[in-house]
Image (tube, rainbow, N blue to C red):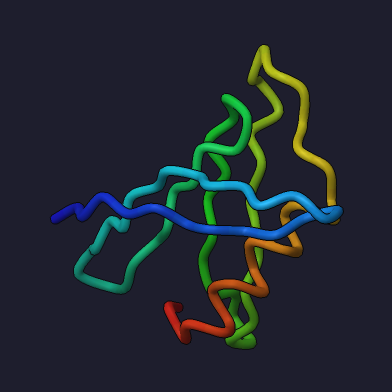
Amino acid sequence: MEHDLEIPVTYKGQDLLFTGRLATFTYGYKLYVNINGTDVVFERDDEGNLRAIVPDNSSNPIPEKGLIESVIDVFKELQVL
């Protein structure tokens, strides 16, 4: 099952809004967030921390690490994952 969502992020003094979707599976869930044309997957690792998986086959530039960390901070504030 999937649910669409919008993620408001403040990064380098700019208010940004990214689209995403929450996908649930029998064993858990993942958040897919489109960051400047690249779908970044957010999930919990084995220790329970949030991690981001960036596809290396995307034709779009890889999002900045700080921007990805800002998205993770929003998820932590909202207690999403």
